[in-house]
Image (tube, helix red, strand yellow):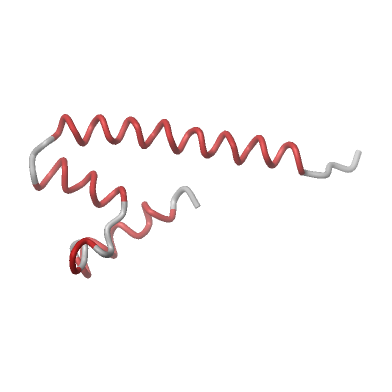
Length: 74
């Protein structure tokens, strides 16, 4: 789940460039637009840090949920 948006970035960039009315954009494509097309590197860096923290929280939640519901035979 965490890497699916990252894996679709090249497809979006090559095939649709965001699509009609931004229908096929994702967070990585938006970060790329901020950083490299509008040259707004500060916004792109801040958004990337927030994305890193948010994905870290999601990964931690998945790990905690897995540890809670996993069955271990000893």
